[in-house]
Length: 427
Image (cartoon, rainbow, N blue to C red):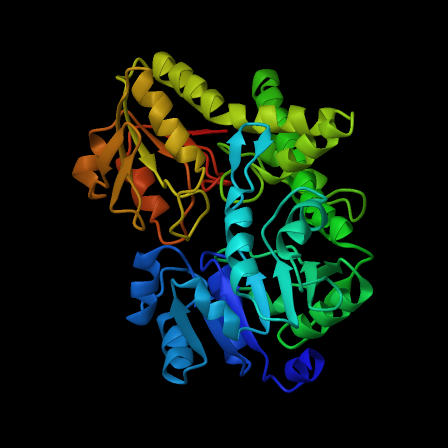
């Protein structure tokens, strides 16, 4: 019985999709003593895992080696191995087809493969972010087939991933887990499963509610980032400092939560997740004006940065020769997904700028029309640029050195907080 297998840690767990969500989750279960089968269609990933090489910031090489040596984690690219699994966790990408249209093709393909191979009595949990109704309206029909009925032969649940790449304070085990099943039995089994590795599990009434939870979380962030980005643009026009405004507002012990402006947002959640909710709402005859407005403001920020830069260089009568420092979407992680720094580099190139970049985590950039290598960050090279744009604030960078050796700096991340210097222009 699956219940007893989970309690005794004898349940064999398969994780489909070994990216920023799936691999840390797989390793977390393996560290707790479960046998974990990792599946991914990317053969390069599988080969790296077999060589005990981690490609994810949140999984150390030492952790990976321990679970592989103990044979608690094995990586495969063949879905037939799913026939051995008691639990199947789906952690595949969910991008956008167009700006307002979700793409759940990766989920569908994974579920079709699962349906062909899963054994009776399995628990299937979708973790990939998607619109409310996906689990019940799309996945359930794909899994149900002759002699395989939900509630009798398998159980289906949704539990939104909440991974924050690079956040050492909140590894997967420390982040409360929301679960919502197709029925009470599915919710109960999934709750029990995640309780084996996570301190707090929060069951909700349905898969649809669980799907909406993740979208609310990221819509909350998008709307507030959009608000503070607009405030930053407004403050610049008025001639006041947005960073000072935020710091003063933070002194209020209730009714305010600080958000900070920047060159845009990237990663796998905030740029797209709210648009899944926007799309679903429109199918029910409701238009979410907040989501559309906030998304528009945030996506405009790279254009705004380039426009502000143009005014700075024009005022200083400087050449259009720029260095972008930091190109990942978030500090201290090697992840370029939807990075606003990439958009800024592309826009600068289209606007006739000579553009170079430096990022200690990204030795080269070959994306679309961009084909660049990271420069050597030394005093001679810095002096060659009219302006340095701080686009991503990696902790390892020597900002005093950059300030000393640069002509001008456009600081979009407030790394020069409290520093009064005519070289520094802040967002």
